[in-house]
Image (cartoon, rainbow, N blue to C red; front, side):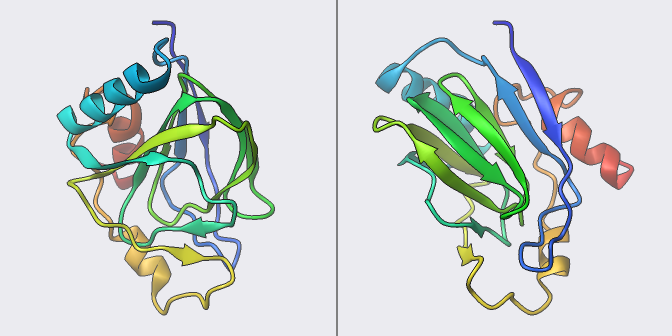
Length: 174
């Protein structure tokens, strides 16, 4: 596996809070496709404490979750995703990519292939809320998003010394 990664630091745009933690995008994490890839992702995420998994796509409207982080693993097709809101970063997502979105991070599918699909999951089987950019911004959203704890393990690599856990703990001085 020749996985590489990118880190995106996003700021509050007044509508979408985004997060004090960066978005982490892992590329070329796996070479499986279709149901084998989806099974691999669900199992790996669950082994690392990220569950309540779903298989679907990314909504075609800007939204975020205030109460939990989210991981998305691409197991079919490809898409152009945008993170951080309408002025945010555009990502080319393809099979083998894993995207870790901290709570509060806006995301949308701008375009996708007809077969595009992801496995999504949440730390500790959290049940995510869903806030659309057109919704009224929830009272105290910044504090709510900032209070979501750093997960115990990275959803794909598990190791405390790498990936999400290290990057996010560095932000909190842990």
